[in-house]
Image (cartoon, rainbow, N blue to C red; front, side):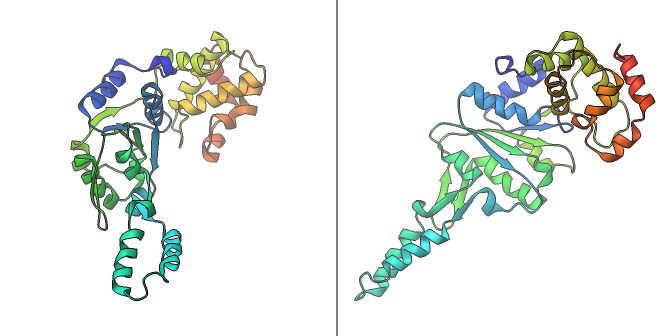
Length: 287
C-alpha cells in the first residue's frame, strides 16, 4: 500500500489482505477523513482493476443501486415492432416482450456491474450508515451469495467475487447481521509521526519543519471539542495551500487567513480566538 502512497499500520494491511484472501467484505469504520475511502481506491490501483463506487444516502433504493430498465429504448423498440407480424399479434407481443426485457435493455447500476465483470473489481459501498435499514437488509443477500434476482431474467451470479469495502462514519449503528458478514477494521486519526509521513508523501515540495508544524496544529485542534474536527483530507488541503502560498513556516497571520482549509464549520471557527491560535502555534514551536 505504501507503493500507492498510502501510509498504513500493520493492522490495516492485514485486514485488507485477509479480506482479499478470504473473499469477505471489509467494513471500515472511523471518523470522517481518516482514510477509509482511500483504502478502496488504493486497492483498485494495486490490483490494477476497476473501482466501482456506490455512494449511499438516505432514500437510496434497490433500483438505483442494482439495475433499471432503459424505458426510452424499450418504448422505441415497441414502436418499431408495432407493425411486425400483424397477422399474429399474440406471437408478436410475446416476441417483443422477450426482446425488451433482455440484457440489451438493462441498465446496470453499481452492484450489478460489480458481479458481472470479467475481472473482479473493487466495490466501494461508501457511507453505508447513511442508507436506510431496509437497504442494509437488501445488501445481506448480495454480500452473502454474490447473486441477485431480476424477475424478468432470473438469478445472476457473480462471475468473480469483487473485493468489497464498506465504509461508515457511524452516524447510525450498523446492524449485527451485516457486521457478521464482514471483516471489521476501525481506523483512528493518525499518530503524529504517521501524519507527518502522510503530508511528506502527498505534498511534494513541503519542508520537514512545516509538515511537523502543520501536524502539531491539526492534532491540537482535534484535541478540542470541535463540531467537525479536521481529518487527514483537511490536513492535506491546508498543507497544499501553504505550499501554494510559498510558506515555509507558520505564524498567526497565515493560520488565520487559511483556517478555512482546515476548519469547515462556522461554529468551530467562532470558537478559535486569536489566543487559541497563538497557543497552538506555541505548541508547534512556531510563531
